[in-house]
Length: 333
Ligand SMILES: [Zn+2]
Image 1 (cartoon, rainbow, N blue to C red):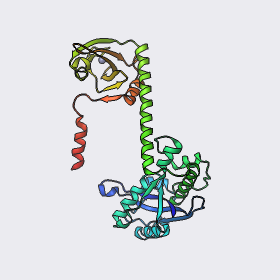
Image 2 (cartoon, rainbow, N blue to C red):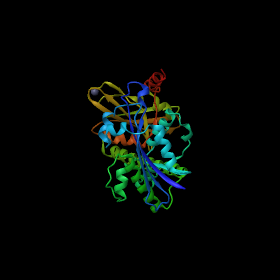
Image 3 (cartoon, rainbow, N blue to C red):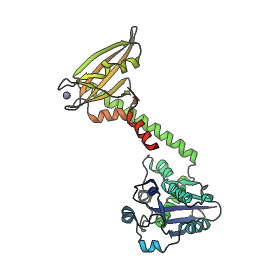
Image 4 (cartoon, rainbow, N blue to C red):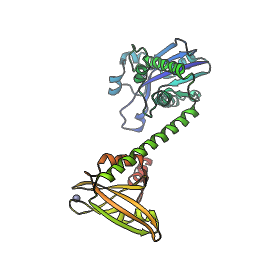
């Protein structure tokens, strides 16, 4: 049983056509651990480009390698076979992030090497984000190296060096966690994290909205209904059309966001900026009635609306936007 940490560097074309979008591997680097305490065995090989002959300017800028060296390298089929042979029997594969796995599959398919497509690859970055950094932001390799205070004398963006760093991080994580989370545990952990984040955003939106309601005066208020249901009030014209505080032009608010017991939406006057509406509903014998308050942007700041949007539950009004249908139709042709 061995642990193979690998990293790829790839070149890209200038995508004028879909075929140009193939990311071509130009370096494979790896570090193999035969035990978590081991020093690690290095592997690094360049791959002679056969699809994009010249280095993309962005690749040239990032990667510490030269074109001459690349042209002398072996072709992909030879290098990848050497690599998998070097890995030994039944290795567990690790990468930092999920890009390398995608690019590897792409290249394997391009060269018809489907026999290697079955390898399982563990995304160490995902485990790091969840268990060490406690965030849903994807941590850079360098940040993880620094976080653990690991030696970082090697240059980054060299596949061999990056693989070495990934192996060091993996070993450090095993030292701290004793065992890496399984795919299932990662999925559950990420779901818990997402829910917790949503709950916090919800709390913050309720707090921010209450502050506005206590502190600010609406420039316009109106009573709505009674309507047969809450949905009817939310959809009604009298809930969505209101005058601009400056010019009196009729404005229309967009989707509602349910924040605690309130519903918040926003409209915009092209000349005088945004206004927020806040609606509260009450169920009575005759149906559902509403109390609508309209605030200008000074009274209901942009940041508060953004918070309501993040933490609130979106209630879509009107038809689904045409933009999306249009895009999908376009992609098919
Ligand atoms: Zn106006």
